[in-house]
Image (cartoon, rainbow, N blue to C red):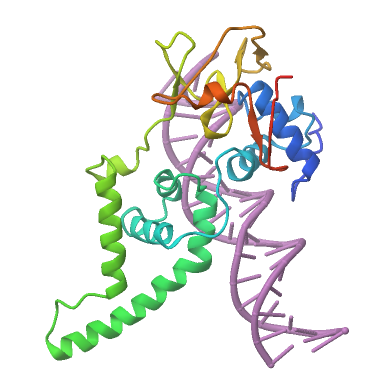
Length: 242
DNA sequence: AAACAACTCAACCGCCCACAA
DNA sequence: GTTGTGGGCGGTTGAGTTGTT
């Protein structure tokens, strides 16, 4: 019987966070189950993935949801239900876990109280024969949602479920390359490393000395931040390739 | 100051789906 | 068509924090 290696659970330490960040910046994301071992972490792939996706990856905004974000969540939840990843895809910089937590701890109460109000209003409405009365906050959120939909090139719920794919251009400028395939993106989508994979179960090899550059379409920013990335723990810019 | 309640949110669990062998 | 595996998702838990009595 093969003994399973000890896997730590619970809160991530600062040291573990640093190990995971350093590893992903250098080698990218290739196999969540294999990566923790190579990164020197006694964590499961799932735990590592969750930590990265919900906390460590660049461009994540935490806490303090704006009124607009709140209305967006409120409106999209009415349409999509509890499909948090689909809702998160329409809220840049927010994770599905964050949105889910926000919904469960705050917005859910609002829905319950509004349902109570609406039940009371319906009863009252029937009595006064005025079926066109609409809950005012419902009207607010639905107009807010209309604005969101108008801002986005979507026409159906299916469109809402298909977020626009991130992409960047290869050094030659001709090939479109998917992020997390072969390139590692830092904050603001700056390319920070480039590697090649021999096998799905082997750690990727960094491509050293390759004359590569990458920019997002219509962006000049990368050139001024060449090979830099942001360390969310220490809140400063680092150069991971030195 | 202490005890308790309520709240927040990071993290886990189990299920499902896609894909490769 | 079947099986195994990895990744993604939503529901839930529980430790830590904040508020109240």
